[in-house]
Image 1 (cartoon, rainbow, N blue to C red):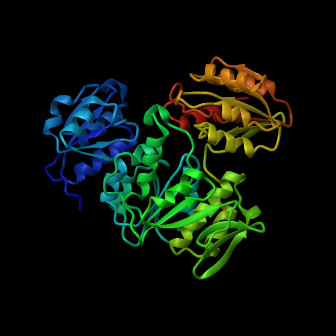
Image 2 (image 1 turned 60 degrees about the vertical axis):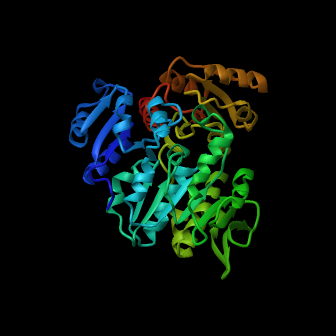
Image 3 (image 1 turned 90 degrees about the vertical axis):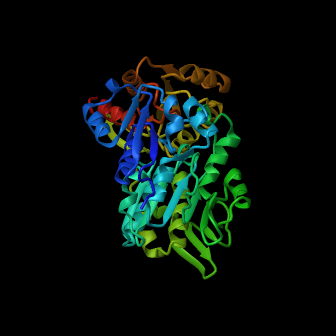
Length: 453
């Protein structure tokens, strides 16, 4: 039982995570105060009705600075930058407890947790690990950044259950006691510098996933990424490696075209790499990471094999939509940074027209253009980052780039530059916020446009 009875708690950010936190706090006797930069008129009627039920006080479109001294703590939604909001900085100066939504969820959770973070692959890896645990017969909750807030279902968990949690740096930034039984850092590349400002701070927030782990916990790390490899020196947990390129004494790796797991008991062959249903080198890495997570959690190799052979991936990640006049349209809206788009490009095996652009997260696109393989024939650039993309194309000598005035215009123009036997790939390498509330809506819009072609 959470100890919040009579406590005045300010929940900041009233999207899904904020609503889940407010409801959990209300159920545990807290005096719930909600705040959001959006005004009351910006919310839907059903949202407002819910706010009225769970909140004792509301600051919608209003600054709650004047009440900060009266609150006992703050719970932040992932999109809220704690260092950039004046009233949160005021709360910190007053030593008020400031926690993340996943911290609140953890405090209400009775089941062991596998927390998965990294710049790319988190959602696919979380969904795949969730399927493995479900197929092992355990009641499994797949929560976090993947879609359902941790705080929403944490009270329903039991000790014999298992939680697989997608944990973004945005959520880990303000944890305190959060301690998964298994943590996993898949990879680290440049991302979210609009929020974190420096790579060092971004990495430090990712490392919080294992901050509270101890010697009887496990930390799954990518041996093929220099930044994650160095994390082995920073965790007290037992390190479990995964690698496409190197064998190790404890972890998952590739040998002679097979996925292998090795520990003190010996070597176990899981399946052939070609048997992994979802394509691409990055998905082989996801399969290796999930093998490591599952094996140290007691799942049998047979269950892991069956799941790797049948799991079909997640929506908005290299998702085939439709073929029109011999052109295959592929939705990779979840490609929200250059490295994610590079992974999508590597999975292409036909001539491809690539749709790039969106909200500016201060990413550098030169490396993306240099990573183009011969299959990338044309780029359609749009959104806030359009000038940056044009500049990177010029810098790297890529000439077949055209601009679009709107999202639909980009999809139409991509089809016009493609021909039978081509792919049209939406993998923007950018967040969606300049045009859409999230990447899911962007992907759904893409699919709707393609369905009308």
